[in-house]
Amino acid sequence: MNIFKINSAVLALISSAFLLAGCSGSKQDGKIRDFAHLNGKKIVVQEGTIFAETLAKDYPSYDVTTVPTFFGIYKALVSGTAEYGIDEDISASLILSGGLSIDTSFTNIPAVPMGAIFNKNNPGLKQKFDEFLSSLEQSGQLAEIRNKWVTCLTPSSIPVPKAHSTEGEPIKAVIEADYPPFNLKNGSDVSGLDAELLTLFADYVKRPVEIKIVPFHELIPAVEGGKADISISGISITEERATKVLFSKPYNNTHIVIVSLKKD
Image (cartoon, rainbow, N blue to C red; front, side, top):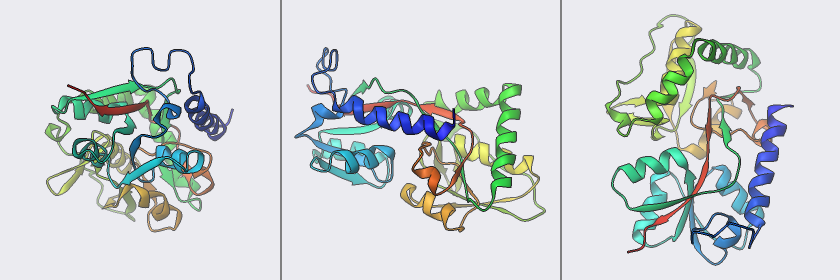
């Protein structure tokens, strides 16, 4: 089955699962696990994410605030401007390990895959990246890289990935750099799982790489408009997005969680 058809089905499951108000087990432990039970609540999500897209499309009457970074989700919870946020499990676990007392409710939605994106006029670069990912998978290196970043509670302590190629036409890349452990600023450099894959890919094709930091919601427009060749920034694969850019094969899966402050 085509990967984009699969993930169109995933998005459909997101909507249908959240619509099942009163479904069996959705609030057995008192935690909200679907969008139906968020009706009437103040919700916060990151701008440009599939969560924001789903809420805007299927729940236009909900009280939703969008913020530019995932950190803004937790700032809104702490300030009281939102009661619930929607995030991904890995970033939520980092916030929890940082000392913020939050509740996380795993939804029953299938894992959502992430992929790198490419301009539609450059399928050759996308093919090279898929070959690169396949080589990492076969050697076991992809799992090692992924585990190194997603299990580290202090991703800024991991050495910043550096590309080594200096000759040839640079690969123009855009990255968010505000979503640890996938991407983050470390001093003046970009670091994280996404940055490591990007620099390793640049070495794989023996080209230098130029990285520009942009907000998450500007990643797809930058690649679609030809301002960048590639972005690796924790971008979930969806059929709608695939009408604008080319997606690589997945390099990671993420799970959706609903977050809130723990009540005393």
